[in-house]
Structures are given as C-alpha cells and as structure tokens.
Amino acid sequence: MGRILVTGAAGFIGAHLCQLLLARGEAVVGLDNLNPYYSPALKQARMAALTGKAAPGAFEFHQLDLADSDSVLAMVAARPDIDRVVHLGAQAGVRWSLEAPFAYTAANVTGHLTMLEAMRRSEGRIRHMVYASTSSVYGSRTDGAFRETDRVERPASLYAATKLAGEMMSKAYTDLYQLPLTGLRFFTVYGPWGRPDMAYWLFTEAMLAGRPIQLFNNGNMRRDFTYVDDIVAGVAAALDHPPAGATHRTYNIGNSNPEPLMEMVGLLEELLGVRAIKVMKPMQAGDVPATFADVSAMQRDFGWQPSTSLRTGLTNFVGWWRGYFK
Image (cartoon, rainbow, N blue to C red; front, side, top):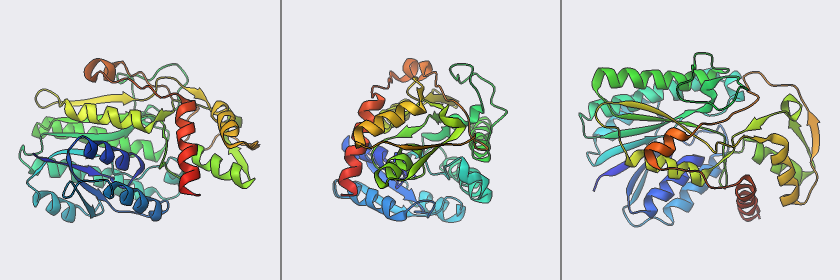
C-alpha cells in the first residue's frame, strides 16, 4: 500500500486530515515547517495527539520548509511509496499578508511550485494531488453564491493573489506535464485545534479574559463557516476520486450557508456564559464582507455534503478549548 504525503500536517486542517486518514488505515507522511506565525507549541501538541493514536509505522513526520525546494524534492524522491499528495502547507491569513508579504510568496508560490515539481519528477508514481486554495480568490462580493465558473481576476489581498497564482501554476503544469490535480477553495474553516488568528478563537480568548472584541465593518460581515470535520471529509473524498486523465479541477468546499458574524458572537456568548464587549471598527484592507460557497459540484462529483451546524461546531470548539486550556 502506498503512502499519502500531507503538507501542512501540523496545521489545523492538516492535523485533522491526518487523523482521518490514519483512522481509515492509510499510511501517512507528514511535512510541516512549524513556523512561528502562531504558537509552534500548538502545532507540536497537534502532532503529539496525532502520533499518540497512530499505529506503529503508520505515520512519520518531517520538519521541512516547502520553500526549501531541494530538501523537499530530495525527501519525496527518497520515498518511492508516496503515491498521493494532499498539499495544505501554506502561509495563511489575509491581514498578516499586509505586514509580511514575502512570507506569502515563499510559502504559497515557491512552496506550491515545489510540490508541482515533486509530482512532475515522480513520473507518474504520484497519481493525484489535492491542494488547498481559498474562497478569498473571489474577491469582494455580495451578489450571491460564489461558483467555480465565476471570474476571479480581482483578488482583494496578497494572500488571495498568491493562492490564485497556485491555481494558475497548477493549470499550466497539467497542460505541460499531464498532471492530475484537484484544487479545493476552502471557506472559513473552524473547529477544535483551530488557528489562533481566526475570529472565533480571538473572540473566545478575549471574552473569557474580559477584553473587548473588534468587529470589523461594524459587524456587518457574513461568513460561510465550515466545520473542520466536514472539510476533511471533503478533502478525502476528492483525493479518493482522481480526475480521469490529465485534468485540473477546482471545487468550492464550504457550508453553503453564510451566517452573520453577529450570530457567531451571540452563540459564543451563550456557550461561554459571558457577554462580549463589542468595539465596532471599519473594514480592514484586504478583507471581504461576505463569503458564500456554491458546493453543487462537490455534491455531484463526490457525494459530499456538509452536515455540521454553527451551533454544533462552536459547541465542540468551546468544549475542546476548556479541555485544552484547563
């Protein structure tokens, strides 16, 4: 049986995906650079929780930076049992891309190219790569559901532009080298073991400490909040159904039910038992007022359907939070 390489394995989605793959009997090679964008201790704790449950020999981890192309290519070449890839490793965060732009080109452009080259050089051994894109490629929109056929030439942030560059490079590599590739545009993923830079985490932390929360665009935001278990089920479904022949495909993967930001705040107030001190702020540069996924293509091709309500997902997150932080 071959192994699945998961980049960004110590990340929020990556760790959940590794857990799912291991639970179904797959062998996994995890890769992550454990960078300090947020606490490496959280990433290490995810890995500890993961390796503690893995069967002997089923999971191995490599601390490598995707922008270090030579090292990553050498590792992949030395592992002839790697036959599938889920490429989740990236520099995330719209707002930080305003402060550290070169981190985004290194991770999301050079890093993505590294994985395309690893697949090309495998000469067919790697039979499918699923990679992470983002809903941010759609730019600033309020005109209904985002569809894969919509034009995406106006990304609102450098982060979005680098992820769109990954999609364009993938299309070029499919045309040039006949690589079977599937890109997934993620919509606002949340849940246990989440990212500390995301709103639900920041709000929870601030509310429990009695600090105010900042609500951008005066709180008039809507997000297609998508629970992490639904996301990784969709990633696995896409991985299990490679395209016929040398094809590049792009899919939305979201809850297809945009919720007002204030609804999330109200649920957190209820679940945490505290009132939020709200500070209204203008829209931040690079942000968008709404996200809304049309997921009919995922449903049609993979039979995938999100099933977790925002209330259930936040309940699970708060339960995890209280256990993790005691």
